[in-house]
Image (cartoon, rainbow, N blue to C red; front, side, top):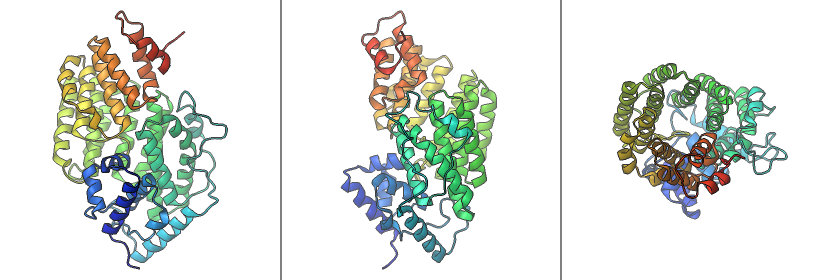
Length: 431
């Protein structure tokens, strides 16, 4: 049998997508690609690395044995890693995929903890125990680990935070054990998987204003640096800087972010995209520190870089995107933080939130819009934006920051029809 080409792998992905009645946009949003990039992958004009292939397989439920002969692109997940021989690659893939299909894996990846029901009120409640004392776990096949992390990422993008919190315990333990038990290229790939697991933990803790975000973000960056991969290093740096901002260290966080951005190549799609997200986070951080000049300069620079590389190869980032729409969302947030929310109204008017790729990103955009209207004293518009957050992601609107905003509307001087029912439904109504 001839080894499958990029074209035949693309045909397999296209067939699985069509069988599930999914659009290229939906698949791309789940796997970190644009619709046009998915089109190029399906036609064989764009080849993806092994890690990304496993993400597509996880989302589309493609049996792993059907990908057993899929070629690993030169350089594997990153160009800096020396490629093994074709024969070694083939043997390794067969071993990994056979292991992934075998029964009896030690760690029940993706399973809910014993006694779990629909999940705690605080999805990050169990993170502290896990982060300070990782549960014992045995190594698992790298393909299996990659698939479970892809599922966890899908839970984050869909704002299924309770499900994500329940699955992270097994994922973190298994990813750590797998990284420690491997060497060479496998260790680097397992390191990327572990770093991104910690990034998910940090993102979840940040959304719940949980102090464990510090621990998760610091571990993510430590593991990412050890792997040597620039994209997870940038992703980890971003979440660590957010924890710095939350603790009031805005100038230090801005310096850290700009230094990390300076180490990334703006000319490559993935590193350029991460660089853009670091600059956007730095802009919002500077705005929180009331540094208007730095905030707007960083925003403008991020917008220029986005326009330069976005038309090229897709970025494939993990928890955020770096698009012109995302720049506009940050601009609304920056202007609100600077105390000039009126300047954000025009930006909000041109922003098509419905076209943003994931429920989590759409909910985030509506959150920043709600904050803008709240700062302008328009309760009805604020409530309308909060209703859109709930429509996109019901668990998002129960976050502490959103409940506080809802309480402000509920107990404010202006009457907002429907706010009491909304507050009761979302946990913002106090006794």
